[in-house]
View 1 (tube, rainbow, N blue to C red):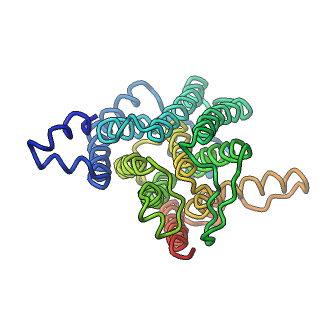
View 2 (view 1 turned 60 degrees about the horizontal axis):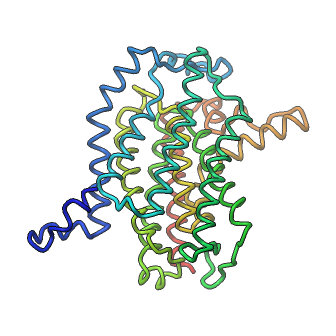
Amino acid sequence: MLYYLLYPFHESFTLLNVFRYITFRTAAATLTAMLISFVVGPWIIRRLGDLQVRQTVREEGPKRHQVKTGTPTMGGIIILSSVVIPVLLWAKIDNPLVLVVLCAIVAFGILGFVDDFLKITRKKNEGLRGRLKMTGQLAISLCIASYLFSQAASGKFTTELALPFFKELTPEMGLFFIPFAMLVITGSSNAVNLTDGLDGLAIGSTLIATAVFTVLAYIAGNAVVSDYLHITNVPGAGEVTVICGAMIGACLGFLWFNAHPAQIFMGDIGSLALGGAIGTVAVVIRQELMLFIAGGLFVMEALSVIIQVASYKWTGKRVFRMAPIHHHFEKKGWSEPQVVIRFWILAIIFALVAMSTIKLR
């Protein structure tokens, strides 16, 4: 919005030339998102507390988590407002890829809001039924994937799959792109949701993964740099960098309130939205497989649940003391801050491995 309002006057005021640079607008979106979080965060926390929008901790979880009961939840409202407003201010909102990611954030946020609302009204840690929740995620993912596929049919998008470590190997996915994109987006949304179990764990890990995709989005949108690094060039993807910047700012701002001991939890409205957004970014910049590396911590969390459920169903035995895996280490005696910081370190390692593949092609 500010780009369209101010940049036309750049010939009269040369300072306004900065609005043409994605790097400037990304930095501005990051700072704006942080500022919004810091300003509205305390008010939203108080308001949610007054409305009795408070967390209900499941009884089968670690006993020391019972002290978290009563903490305000649905803090994803802070995250969504801190992402959407800066994007509307600093990004070129007529860019189709920007609109796709923005719609993904809002749509998954609405789904998460419904889930959280049901938990609050029922006074227990059960919202939407699993199948209904998954159906909603798949429906949103199908809309995103179908739209992008239609853009590819008109030559405005590519459905070639980028393979890390391989320079020239970019197989055309064709119609298979739709189910694959749905898997990536839905899986990412669920994985971040599963990671959201300890103070600061999900938001800090999301921050780290998003930093990687901020760089990748910028490269994908720059024809010269993407050609040099052998990364698929996606016209218009550079503007997605601004969204990633807003997400980083929102994560930093929310972490201020979500750090242990948390003043507020993000709830599904935040975790589903952030996970869906990262998955959508990975799809629109054609770096889906990079998400499995950069978001390795989320993959680890999701796999721990899958393994636990499968093992108990087939053998009657549990592989982990509790799933997701962050609770396993709590059961082993690690304190909550120890688990969170050590998992952040793992997330950073995954991010560094992902970044290293950019040159190893």
